[in-house]
Amino acid sequence: MNAKRLLLTFIALAFGSGVSAKPPCKQDDRRCLSAACDKKDFAACHRLGNILKLGLGVPADPARARALFSKSCDGGDPAGCAYLGGALLTGAGGEADPARGFTLCREACDKGTPAGCNCQGAALLFGLGQEPDALAGLTLIQKACDDGESMACNNLGNAQLQGAGMEADPARAAESYRRACDGGYLPACVSLAALQREGRGVERDLAGALKLFTQACDRGLADGCLGQGFVLLSGEGARPEPQRAARLFQKACQAGSASACDNLGILHQQGNGIKKDAKKAVALFRMACDKKLHSACYNLGHALKNGLGTKADPARAAALLGPACEANEYRACNLLGAMHHTGTGVPQDAARAAEFYRKACDGGLDTACENLKKLEADTANPKP
Image (cartoon, rainbow, N blue to C red; front, side, top):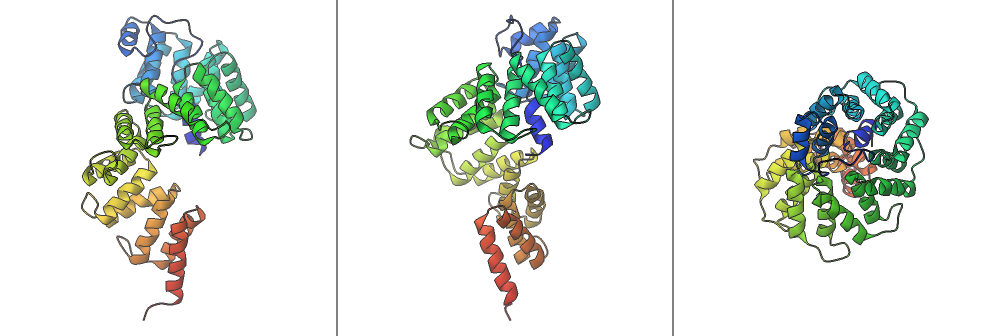
């Protein structure tokens, strides 16, 4: 995972501090929070912004979330300034301004706001708005977590899992995710569920994972519905339930999850748990690909190359597959290799074909290794 993407994981999904006083509005009551914000309850503004940022029960709206953070900050709420700082650091909901973002985070931290220390720490860890200092960054994130900022505990778990500024340690990551989840930060519940499902850093616990995914989904978190759908589709620990999985993918797709749209498209393509509909599959792949999900761009490229649910357009397929391959979607590299091998949608070029096959083979795709061997044999023994 690259630094930009990991930073986005750290601070772009911010919502709700675990240390604020008990609010008059219920946790996810958007109508109440909106009314309170209109009445200049600036803490309500940043809480509503974080719900919209995360997409809890509604499609994520980072631009509107950023506007609410700005209103909260302008009203003198240091937590609102911290969340606005996070958005400026990453460019969520508008243009990035790392220098101003770092200043807002630092000032909020100096005022004793854990959310500020959290985003200042993430900025230091990745060197946004100033020189990187991993130790100082992690120290601030740890402090914010210890001070009750559940999102900081989640960010600490991300660092421990990915090895950002430290050695990767899935067991410690699971502990941090559990703290964040217990504090109400739903993305941490999903991350913990994923570790439980894999048995990574914790004992494998399919029932526990499904429970956490379901709780997050019931609260409106798209990734919770996605995870719940995967468990039900695979039938892990029980019989597969593709129809329920399809409904969950549909729910998550509508909430803005590109991965859910991609997987729903696959089910439509297969007719698994839902009506077989190749055209619908293509529309879903396109929707997810437009959100830069490279697996969906592969699926769309495959459909365009072969005319599955759409008019065949190999040249357009190749244009989609190129960036996906660059992003290490190895199936895209393999398909591009085949297209260069045969001259489908691109000029026939054995050297380019070998280059794409080799990248996919080195990435662990056995089919690409077989294709590379066949290409080398064809090249060594050309047909008369």
